[in-house]
Length: 264
Image 1 (cartoon, one colour):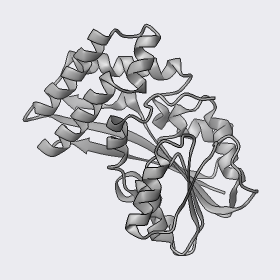
Image 2 (spheres, helix red, strand yellow):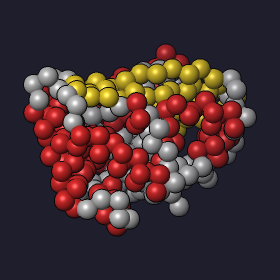
Image 3 (cartoon, one colour):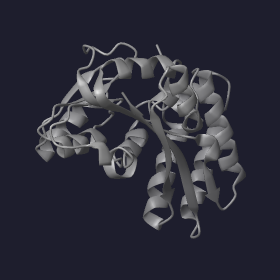
């Protein structure tokens, strides 16, 4: 079974809760319409899923996650918003759905954590109806850039890549989406990019404190120490670097994402 590098600590879910269809799936939105059935793979706390359900209502929308940890929060969010969404535990390699059963399969920040993203793409296409789309979006960590320069953040990026790859995952997934689609025999697709940018005081505080927390108290931190990739003191230094960046009046950071819209 694949290992989720981040885990589900609150510092991680803090980041996930910020995600919306608008800021995380803009490339998919023009292809949505009322009545479409949607499967959201790796839904986490459901913020994107609930948005998708609102956009395709009365279409049927299901959010799947390998872990039960965030699903109660996802169900509570859907109930609070008055949106009809089903949430369930599911495995992207073996989706519990028949062939040709949904119009849209969406996976945000999922393929980067998988040991076999090609097999996952094939499975997502299997359950998608002819004429439908599979939409995937993943960050490309190596393309992350920030200001001001900070050796501590340089060490963070190198460490994150080592931890992810120790899980047989690919932290620079964004640039590889087309190659994985081709390996799955999928050639009818459109590739795009978009970025998250954190620059205001509030944005820097939010992102910096999220990663400072992850650096010392998350599955990422536990894996880094257990595998001998970092000491607790080194992780404390990484957390301090994130807080230093967050406090910088001229601080700025951008995360580049690859996006692929596959036509089935």
